Length: 78
Image: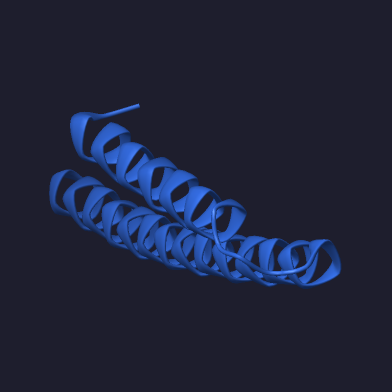
């Protein structure tokens, strides 16, 4: 994992931990606290999924550009 990936993962973990601690120390009933934790977990999972899909798309774009460049270079020497 590269440095920016580690930083992003650390920030996401910090946000999640802060959200959970904030909810746990809030003066709500247990069922309300569990609902809030569930909602925050779903939001975090959706955010991670979106980031993963964007990264996958960027990787595919890079792959296509790389393949095109290699094919062009091979054709230059053929």
